[in-house]
Each structure stands twice: as C-alpha cells, then as structure tokens.
Length: 74
Image 1 (spheres, rainbow, N blue to C red):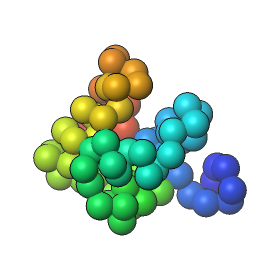
Image 2: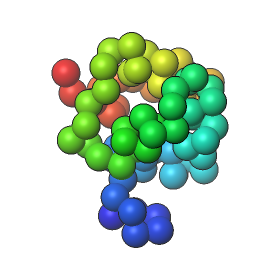
Image 3: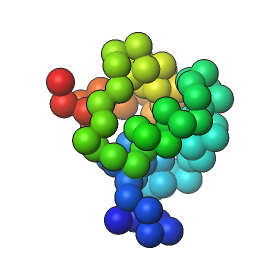
C-alpha cells in the first residue's frame, strides 16, 4: 500500500512520487476517470494498447523518457 492506505500500481506510485493527480492524467490522456483509477490501483490490470499509448503520451509531457516497460510487461 502507498499514500492514503489505498493500493497502488507501478503507475500509481509513479504519479504519487511526482505529485501528479489522476484527474490530470485522465484529462491529458482523454480517458475516463474509472479507467485511470483501475490502471493506477492494480498491477493485475493491463489496459489495451490504445489506452497505454494515450497514457504514455500524457506522461511524456512530464518525463520524456518514460517507457511502457516502466509500468506494464507485455
């Protein structure tokens, strides 16, 4: 567990360390808040490739070196 006692995925922990809000990611990636919640709370959930691409494009505004392998293994 991380933060306020909620479970976090690798992506969720990455956002927490950088002080990035899930709301920002949902807006920048143009994804539903429920999708962002699911992907930031469980490493068991692997989003489809289209969703991964949108998330990575948004995250690269913060860190241009972020890679898919940082969060998901395919």
